Image (cartoon, rainbow, N blue to C red):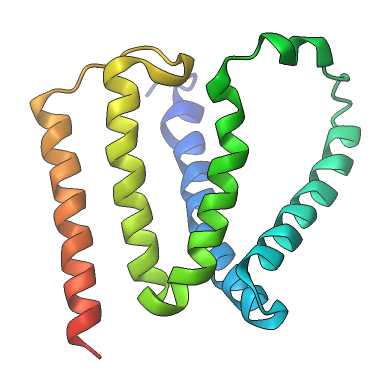
Length: 159
């Protein structure tokens, strides 16, 4: 095995796997915050504030250069969607995780992510390169959607 490929083949997917493993804990903790604070949007604000408090020292430690604020004027309209999507996801997690369970919510999130990612790849949206849909990718996404339905069926039938 070429050792130059090791990070791309092993390390990067492992980091992505660990990042994904954190998401259900985020959903659960945000749901608990929503119950404690009395409204999902207060929990979203607290969660996002904690994110800011963690990013600021990371920027300092990494000695990240100051951004070019003037460049924001040239940003495409969709560049702002990340913040909107973050609030939508956190709010949905707060409301739906207690109703669907962690696995039920996350499997739906994953199916939605994969379906929209397929569209992003197909048409090269969000400034990413085009990666056309093919039969293998459609079958893989179909399996994920079927998996989502099976998890939901298993969740509702076990109540």
